[in-house]
Length: 248
Image 1 (cartoon, helix red, strand yellow):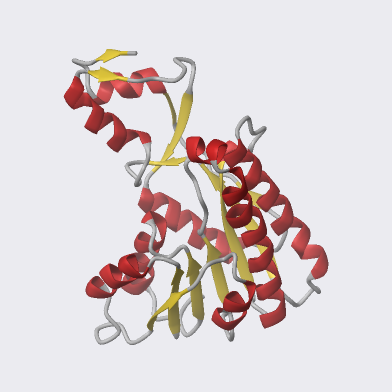
Image 2: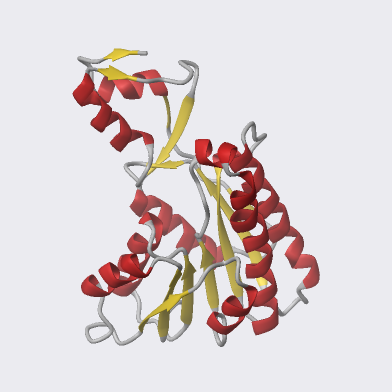
């Protein structure tokens, strides 16, 4: 369904966006694949790997989901949007709540408005397991975003834009996540653990992209898709990564 279509990925220079770009370019022939993000350095680095000369369909579009006018311009004649842009670090959210609200909640609202105005066919928004009964601000902002995307189907007519949400767990080895953190801290001989009762749900980057692309095909509107994925206690993960380390 992606052949000959225009796809836009917000936050397209992140871990998910890069893998999604790779899989789409290797398996489909889109009319355009637009990478929308606010980091010009990451866009430059991506363009070295996937250049417009080698992949004529690819476009790099600088912008922030906080900027509704820029989104309106970017969404022009777009068929499908995968909304991956977000602020995601749990401790950073507690210290910078307004910034997370601006990006994760108001940014989601801007994506919805731009999609409706431009007649985008489908919008798939990436969420997190932390949005289920959230106990931190990051999870709370993603829960609000999920509610906005589900409610957006009320504004959309039957033949207009479809909005759906994908909610999955931690991506193994993604930037800023616990596995690279533990690997780095293993050099000190001590791994810090916030709570020994913590459980993490895991999904690989490839699995997350294929799941989102499957949802893009299946979505009829207002669904929250949750994959069945394995879980692991954080202490077991710490032992698996660095069995010689003590835990604090």
